[in-house]
Length: 267
Ligand code: IPE
Ligand code: IPE
Ligand code: MG
Image (cartoon, rainbow, N blue to C red; front, side, top):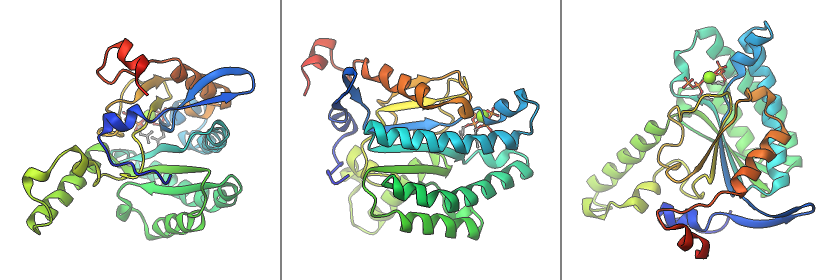
């Protein structure tokens, strides 16, 4: 994660993918950064005549599987949408359950994250969370901060519009303080104030649960992400399903506005 990721999104994305070889596959491109909307927990449970909360609990197992598979596959950053800025609209009991589940998972998973060399970072407006959860997040981030195999970003109380708005607010404050002039504002200055300016944009954007929408996830950063929609509910999304998504990505041609021939010749 030490490379300087500051240039324009398109240029960054052009240089994002790495070619890796694996034992029994021809050289497949592995996305450096994968973002996932983990959707379908509730429906998974309802189909089994279980309470929706059972689906959320089952979803934690999928998180573990996909994190570990990501490390194995050489993904450098994984961003998981765990709780959106709109999810507060759910029944209070479900919101409370999700927050408690998050507190418990942070506590329970740190050891495993360390074993796998995974550094945790939470993105989103965490000040809205109960103090207990804010502490849990800070502790887990601290306990994993030197890990280098992969960065796991959990988006909690995150919204793409929130992210863009807070970047705009920071730009306005910098302009008012005289640190920048309005005419200095460009894509680089803007993206430097988003939630994770140190990472490349997601190469692959996966949504499980059958819906084909972004639901206010990474609006700016997914400008050139490859989209992949899975019919599987999140608790059923296993290592094999994930590898299928990665393989699908590996066969796509990313053109970034160029012609196919140009893209073939791009570095
Ligand atoms: C995703 O599953 C988890 C969260 C949004 C927290 P859902 O709870 O949205 O599951 P469905 O879409 O109702 O099946
Ligand atoms: C998106 O799922 C948010 C998360 C997975 C955390 P939702 O289930 O909340 O999305 P909508 O409401 O169906 O668009
Ligand atoms: Mg849903």
